[in-house]
Length: 123
Image (tube, rainbow, N blue to C red; front, side, top):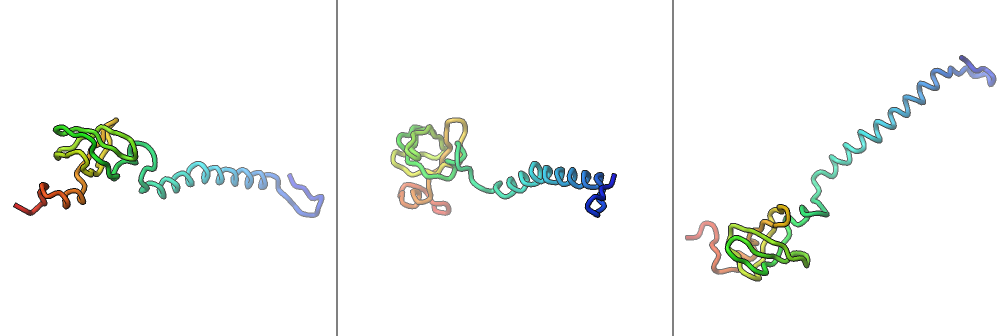
């Protein structure tokens, strides 16, 4: 079918084909390419919310007995566990978060300031 009212020959089948093709390309970009690119760009960022956001933060030991105790981090009291012995007011670094318990290790700054801690390589 051709329209020649304005003197320009237009094939409506070609027009429909180009419009539908353009819509398909836009939808593929919107629902496939943009989400993949967004995920690729943000995959290395640390979590800003949730339990994973605590990993790497410093906390203060409130109480400790054996391998478990409580720590204060960002104004909240959490249960914590560590293979290292800790004392109240020690600074610890959060290494992992499991359910409602944080895994912690002694902070390097605390270890160097604590005369009772052993530094690797010393007798």
